[in-house]
Image 1 (cartoon, each protein chain N blue to C red):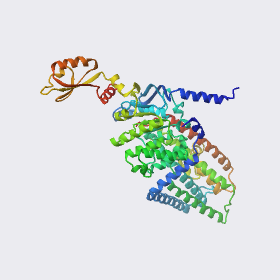
Image 2 (cartoon, rainbow over the protein chains, first blue to last red; image 1 turned 120 degrees about the vertical axis):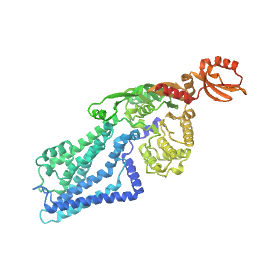
Image 3 (cartoon, rainbow over the protein chains, first blue to last red; image 1 turned 90 degrees about the vertical axis):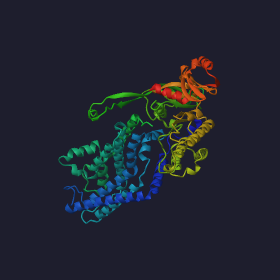
Image 4 (cartoon, rainbow over the protein chains, first blue to last red; image 1 turned 120 degrees about the horizontal axis):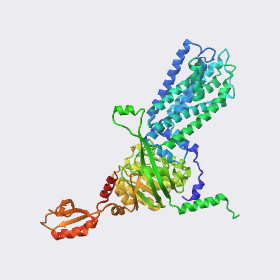
Length: 292
Length: 345
């Protein structure tokens, strides 16, 4: 190749096209094992249904989560739908990759990723798409739509559609996914220093468990330090809470802290992504590559 | 003033440098790892929880090397000698502890895209193709990542799969391929973007003789056609004898020899092999007085003696024995290298 030819190529490949290739190849692979694909889709939907069932039973005993929080049954189901949407996006795009990232570090397979003339974090984070996990996304949307329909048609204090939500809800879903992704990739990257880190990867599940409930439940007693830590230090509480609140509007008029929290979420997203980038680069710098 | 911007001048200088300089330049390159010194036993393992002793392992020690464009160089050395580490440093996968390296004017561990588009690394023990998918899907991914022109991609793929005789296997999932076939696919994946520098880390490991031979032939042909600069590590002397004009022996992370394959024998072996064919009825008894007897299959006898002693020894033997034929040979390369490895251990 002459220097002129090299110059004709842009410095970066088209990330969109590369991602489409990843998505396509993953789909081809998933289709190859169609029984597995079906079982995965069905089992995750079953789990989702059982979860809804459990909360349905809980709401037989109470009308709302906490006094005056506004999280009644259907508001909470909107919250749950949001959780499913975010989780399924994580499972579809990032979870299989982060899991494999630890493995690549341990086995030295990361070598090949580092050789490619493309951003290594992009390559590592998105190379596989687990299409079967999208079934939960559909389920989450379904749950959300049904719940909103209930809220809209109830006699007392019905839910009103606000056009801004069409932009805000997807935006904050994206923020939530970005925050969870950052946390996940940071934990996976620690394999570089620890050698083996199944435990830290599990840690992700422990931490993100906190994000599955309305943040008001932490607003009392021993919950307060948790509320502080998981909002400002590891901001997993804003992940589901902010988009779900914006959509479900448990309180009308909105509480005074809702918009500041939404603003903070944007800041938290940018910071999380930056921290994940920093940790990832540090990890690559320390990568020793398993011997062959 | 002269119609040239500063940028253009810089570029010209850079271009000139890249012509004038060797394609690979390594100076005082070192890489050491800090490893946890594990003690034996449970008690020691528990103690290791809070008090750990570390030691530094020097994988590569102040290596200096220059490789010119179009050379096919072999790295030879025992396991753990630092061959693979050197290739990984040159690929930018790991950072050095000290020293510098430039490949085509790029510092490898800065990993800029321009550099990464111009070289490739093939590792016999690791694979980069998607396991469950046909190799051609991975190739298409490379087409995108390396921004290979569509026509060029089709042409390269046809040419390479033709040369390696794997056209019919392109559509078969990688996991269903034999090791040899998989290696061929790995080579195609590495060569699709026409790298100017190629690092091969034991590309024929575990392959049967025929597959090894195929890959050797392919590499020789490809290198002759393209004048690609290739650095190869291998434990198979046949690979090296068939392919490389230049051999670099690394032991203990340092270069011990740099020259031709036959030069290794001159440098490291102080002995010669005397092969005698004794006359009918002549016994080999007493030959050990003259030199170390390495084999006796009458009427043939082989002896090893110091290079300088050969004429004296031969004269003495011929005085005492009736000999039909004499040959003086270098010891087998494998033996010389095995000796060399053992000494380094």
